[in-house]
Length: 302
Image (cartoon, rainbow, N blue to C red; front, side, top):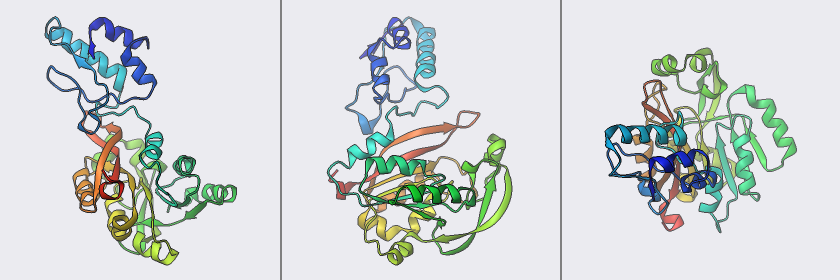
């Protein structure tokens, strides 16, 4: 599909093919730096937007790229999928039995709610060490017998660990926020208090809980994702079908893993990266973090 300047204007009014893909939540791949198009290897079969090579000079091309970036990606950079991952996930596991979900970094359980809507027969275990969410999780469990709050952190060792409580609940972590995170997001990342919370290894906890399989795992634990995976290496390798995890492209938490380290570890366990969602850049435009969806290649036959 080719987009001319006139067609780009039509896209803004939601009347063009580009706009129809936006409205349907289709994937709009990444703009390249050169003339050509937008491409994402994981979803090469989807429609792409291609810039014409006969546009009227460099200024037209630059203007077109600015327009598409502003309309399609806003402030999120250009590595953006417009698919809703919570709709993609059940389609990827269609026909598969999902009995157990793990939501690590569950906060108030809003992601668990979406996962249970996709997998209504499953039991969900919500790991959340932040005491600020304890009452909300207990109330959620009272309303839904499938919900089992675990007021614990997932880590690569068991015991009491330091927990950094920040101005924003969403930035709290077992790891200390780095100076880069504090400089770029001062209102969210400033540390208000350091406490201690109980932590477990996922493998140990699963054995003690009598769980032989965990099909779906969601991780949003502010830089501690790799440690949690290391603590669950056995059960992830033996039973897990899908992992949806936050990944980091800069070390925004001291000692936290970056994307390449998480990706290598999960690939060693047999997982393959499906796509990235909701990327966030810092004030200078550097990609900081995103959410990654991994599938176990052999177990799912992909």
